[in-house]
Length: 128
Image (tube, rainbow, N blue to C red):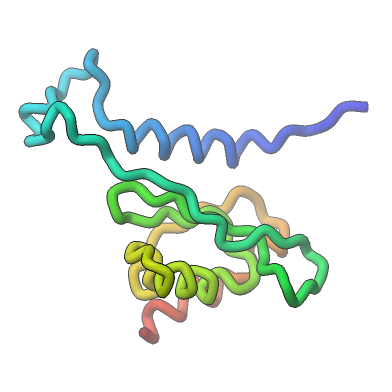
């Protein structure tokens, strides 16, 4: 049996992780020219905002995660409840997930459980 591996989410996460590491030592841009301390390291983390399935489970939100790089949130997928889960994370001490700051979204594929929260993530921050 051949299993298809979802490569797009992996590529997005690798791209963001690479961006978070800053320029390499072989880069044409030096850390000194960017005013970055040689010992400074970006603060990077992943917050799972929802891990549910298309099934209507009241205890789970739709698939979504946030990659946080230097207090900037990059949201990947927007399942049901994505803004409410981000608000919950903000209330628990993750300032970059304040709903009014959600302005970058990556969609891995167009299944409804990964996109149904789009109106919420698009409209709610503007209302706030």
